[in-house]
Length: 468
Image 1 (tube, rainbow, N blue to C red):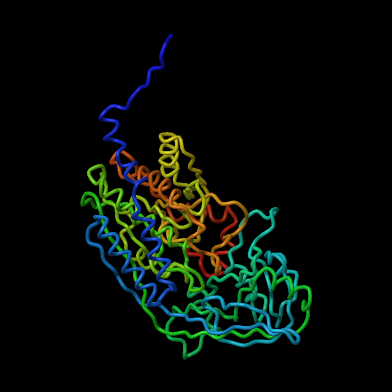
Image 2 (cartoon, one colour; image 1 turned 30 degrees about the vertical axis):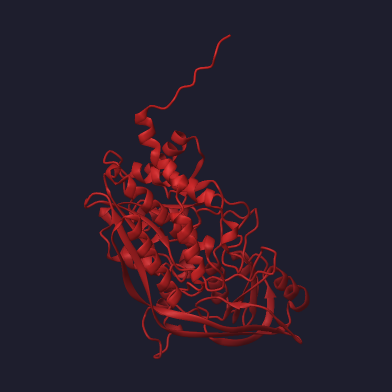
């Protein structure tokens, strides 16, 4: 009777894969995630954001990264007060959207449904308070960001803005609305009292309401006079980026990034505590494999992402773009088990993801289109290779993100560890001297934005980075 032959790994193979077992046994990233969510409020410019940045600096140093440090910068702080919608003899629950002005307005409620561009064009919104959903219909060909809908309301004469969550569960959504570029370009909206040309506060008071409150407003008060009131304290503040390094002291470097800030209404576990925890886990894994790195790796946890990509924009503006081989930006990782790389037309980034997925027989989805809403973007607009790393998600929009429900128990350590293995392998592969990642020209990026129907939204929000 025959016997099966078992092929055992060689000693060489065992050494070459020992780092995988180390990640599976590691609690470094998950412990850091717990520390971040326990801070509480990590709003840009807050004491909590500073505490989270210091914790991240210390965690990167403990992982073995060099020169862990903070670099501070000034921002315009925004702190929420009370907000309310008064409709008939009722007061409806809502929360202010960051960068909303402190204001009180009255006007007829106009429920604009999804708030597609054509809806704004065909509806008289002069003097109205407009309400739009946070999603887009399945038949629509692109995602419409909250700020795009907000500025369509501004352009069409609305006096107030209500953002209705499409996710059920009595969860009002948050998310910033103002644009420094938009305000500085609009001379009619500025006064002598404005501090600088970088005033990011929006033109209209804006609030988020739950799906249920939005349905109630639409059913009972569409077309009726309502009052929207926002209390907000607008003040000077300070944010900071966290930096640390590993690998050889090459001029060229790879940036492994996340953002450390979160909205003040929740723990910010998914957005983006998990991304910063991943950066720390990757630093821990790569410190053990530092001899395998052929290009310097810089870890950066940006500040003030949620209020306009402020930290990453400041970094990108001061950086030597030619010296950045690639940006691997973690924002939305760990939410689900399968990784997704949005590669912005950089074929070499997709090739590395495909190589790693094949090597480990583990799926990684790649999306070649542009994704302009996280900290990779200030680099990609200049043609720097960047991938937006997140999880494959079901359904439209952010899910629990930007709501009270963004909490740690919805995530799993298993997912963080599995994704850390794939990302560690991807970064080591990108760092190889024989891997070339060609930069693109800003003109090429602009052409793609136009072709993918993203330019219109960026222009209306003031985010279009190119001269006409």
